[in-house]
Image 1 (cartoon, rainbow, N blue to C red):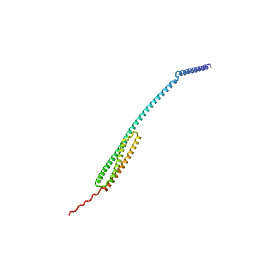
Image 2 (cartoon, rainbow, N blue to C red):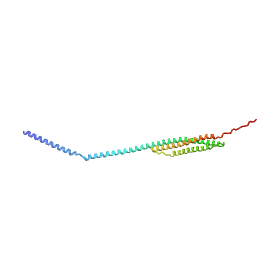
Image 3 (cartoon, one colour):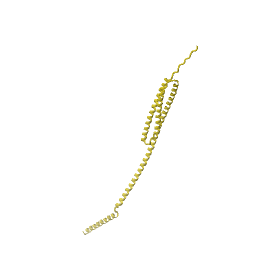
Length: 223
């Protein structure tokens, strides 16, 4: 009985000593490895600052790329507008050149015809014919040819003095305005050329009636 009690007491004392030793060991481990919260916060803040700096650098690069791209786009648009303006100016110049050649040649031809008519009037007048009506019509024909020439010269001034700007909108508007002015002026030129030609045709008919008929001559027969 005593042996049992003795063994029990020894076992209790042994367990108690082991528990105390374990508690002391855990206390030592906690003491040697404390948690450093300020160090962790500093590391987090440093990482945030690094991320912010990287983001700012990326944003600056993106801004530079956008600015460079915008500049290139503006340069390309400028070149395209210059080419478009050149094409428009060539178109207007070509159209005016054709119109100028046609009207110039027509007015010159009509003036030559009128000069021949005037020469014929002088001959008929010298021969004793009545050319009063024809002379009045010559004045009318000359007036129409003068009006045609004035309209033609006005058209030249408009074309030569018109400046087409570099923006697409103003270029289109300036071109429309110029082409409309050319169209209006050409109508005036054509109108007076047509009236002058019609008048000269009428003069030709009047001169045929005004031209004195040659007197018949008789010869006596010799017996």
